[in-house]
Image (cartoon, rainbow, N blue to C red; front, side):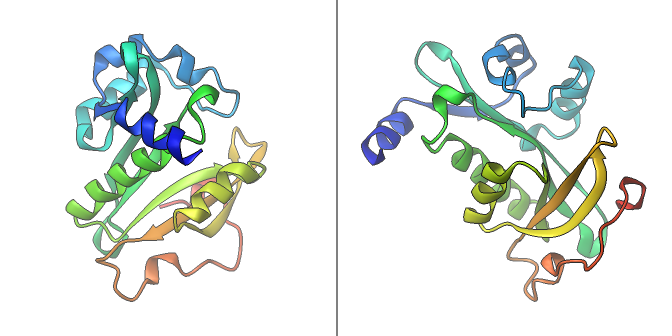
Length: 181
């Protein structure tokens, strides 16, 4: 496994996501756990937060995954947010998602964020375990976040600016989507 992961790193190219990539990533978005958005949504991210959007492709320029993120919040709530990170099944367990998450975390550090956060389906134990291995922890549960039918966990990872790690102290009660800041 380690040899395959090292070989994959040698054979991949990571770069900023571009509008042209939107025409090539169907193999990435076919996963049932991947949230797929309208074209305008992706274009808005590329226009407003290009430094938070990255793409990895392999030989023959085949998409291996992408991450879309943004910066948001005010004061000690200023942070990087992972809107979507996805890797198609044939490229999982090769370190692609780890690489993409690391890039977004570094951009968030550079942008002087206090933490990085993301939302994940409460039922997606594989993803939750993956994020925990990267240092994320559950900050709060959001009732009915996914189309009003499925709860989400808001997971966070403190960055170096949050010296006291206040941003990751978990809330004791679930919140509603309208209560999100």
